[in-house]
Amino acid sequence: MNVKKLKRILLVAITVSASSMISFNILTTGFIVAMSVLIMGIFIYCYRDMKGHHIAWMVAVCSPVFRWAIMTVQNGFSWNGILEVLPDSVFFLAYGVVYAIAYKYIIREERNLSNFFFVVLLCDWTGNCCEVLTRSLLSSSMLMSSEYFLLFGLIAVLRTGLVQLIGSSIEYYTGFLLHQERDEMFKKLLNQASVFESEVRVMEKNVGEIEVVMRKAYALHKDTEDSGLDRETRTKLLDIAKSAHEIKGDYMAVINTLKDVYLNEFKREKMLLSEVISLEKQNVMSLGRSRGCTVSVDFRVKTDFDLESPFKLMSVVRNIFTNSMEAADGYKVYINVLVESDRNNPEICKLSFADNGCGIEEDNLEFIRTEGFSTKFNEETGNIQRGLGLPVVCDIIEKEYSGTIDIESTVGKGTTITIRIPVEKLGEKVA
Image (cartoon, rainbow, N blue to C red; front, side, top):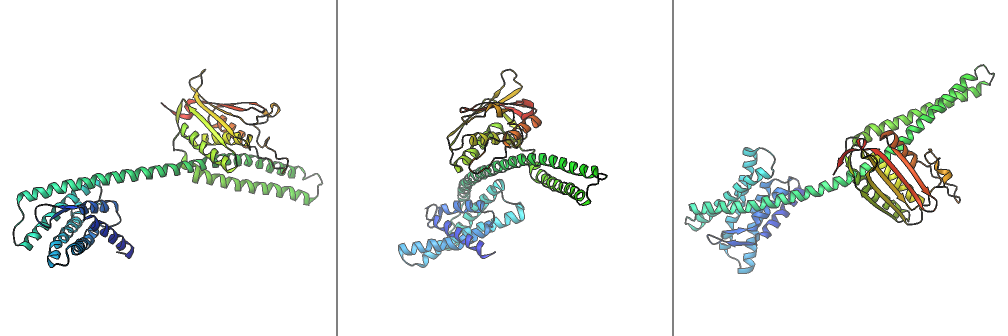
């Protein structure tokens, strides 16, 4: 046993010994029913990394010393005081011996709530019997009787029942907190996966464009074989084709790694559509605060779904929210979301996103789905955002969900995006 664990056991033993002050006498002088046994049982169950009999034996040392010290302070030193607390030590020694024998030779498995109840019940009853027998020897009179055996059993049942109840409550509450923590962590990971999903789509598009550059450079190299073009220029064309091919290979390696190692882990995970919107609401509000912008999102989900592939739809919602926030940069942003069945076709789910942004000019609406197109140009810095939001949204909705997307916008008033997705593509409908 290492020093750190020994210190923890000693601390538990001192705590248990202090709780022995809450007690009452029954049957004979010195024999008490103390809270210490109850507290010790709870500690033994909760501290799985410490052996129960080690705790009991440490209490067998600390508890009598603690009681004797209190008695000495109150009544002065007396040898009778030592004899009075000695049986208390016998109780905990017997408790520890029975506990060790029960788990090592009878139960032979890790403690759990079911076997723990019976072991502690036996330990408590045996400890009480040994304590009274010790007091009988010290007083030279037989204090035990059949009634005492039954009474000790009742005390053991009540005390062990409380240990069971408190232990179950602690275990349930701990499990609840752990589940809540894991759920929050999973949602964060799921959000990261949706970000990677968007970026992977962009990378896959770039791979296609690199492939085009590579083919054009190689074709140009072949076409100039008999054109009299100098060898150095033709070699440069071939080098361009080779470099493009290498870049494509690097892109594909990154894409495959992200898909195989990360994204595929989330393909079987499910999440409610309402949870997706709620999570992205928190994300865009947090992003808005970091940029000095106040974002308010109101959403109503009339028809909810247990999504088969939630992180793809997370990409959709996040990109729409981010676009709305950036369209009203520096102002208070309002986003209203409504999810319901389409009135004209119940087999279609309709998602509407309306914001109070600056809107999109009519001439730009036809280009808004084009990769790289952006109206977000900073005249002072010359920076232009890469315009991936709505193109990614359109790509996911049309290719992954076989859905449609309509965009209506009025300059100075805002934009409304309406998405229609077949119900069968989303997952199971939730009441």
